[in-house]
Image 1 (spheres, one colour):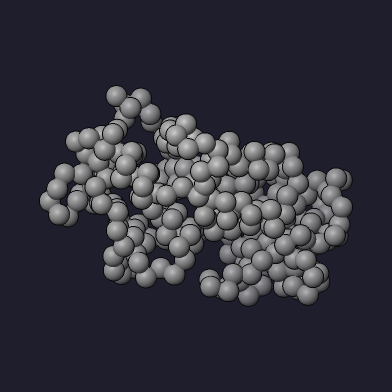
Image 2 (cartoon, rainbow, N blue to C red):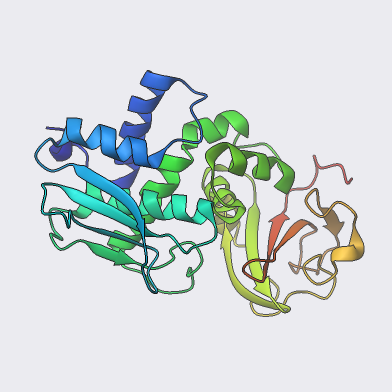
Length: 277
């Protein structure tokens, strides 16, 4: 039985994407989460499918997975229809789909989930992290992402925005997924009003031992606080040693989120093959 063979979020995401690629090919993006959930699960789990996916008025909650409230067999996924970002809703739907595949047997009452993409500073349980991992790998399959951007390839926010459009996800989610597959030293820094909210580095960056010069304050030379330094902030600008990192030159790329009032800075090291715009 499929459910007993697949254990983790990466395995489930790879299985679902294999089914979709076999049926629809490599150019199937962005996938319809509603169609996948309601058409695939009755075939995999005919006694326990996802039987409804629907928007609802969910105060303070982005999404829920619950037994079908119509007293039919199966499960329902409900998303907060007041959330303005459709891409954020897509990640939430993927997250709840992950809970269904991974956790429903151990949690028969289901789940009520807040915004997993924005509330990254909060400590989360392993099952919430697993649902996030499934959603990211389901919506942005690593194999397809590597066809768009090779792991060793330098990239910029314009290319990552193109990929975000391809998968129907936010730029923040796209950058975080790219950081998981790249072999380059790179880091995403999210800041507001000159203060760093959080950062996330690629595995190669973490292994190199490079740390931010100041873990709280955005450097005075940075694009994050000086957006007029370049006419092409998504393509980036070289910054000198000692700006973001004590002993490293950096290329910084920046975009501001007007909706959530924070700034995304993508920092690249290993600049020998980079030509400044």
